[in-house]
Image 1 (cartoon, rainbow, N blue to C red):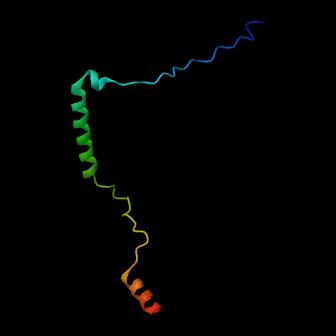
Image 2 (tube, one colour):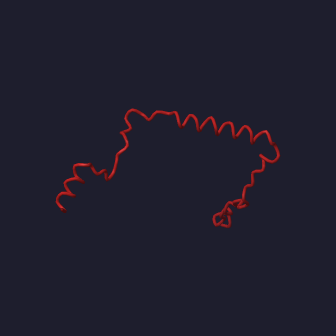
Length: 75
């Protein structure tokens, strides 16, 4: 009967923060990280959008004809 009422204890979670000091321990890593970031940044700047992505939309664009007609109406 005691075996039927047995419940497994809840799992314990480690709540200690993770502190990464690899850059201080291995100084060459900082150089490698900076290089990889530069390479990825250049890739992102050179990438062309997918052909199915629509062109950017210009919101609230006022054409000259609209501004001229409004100015003539207010005169």
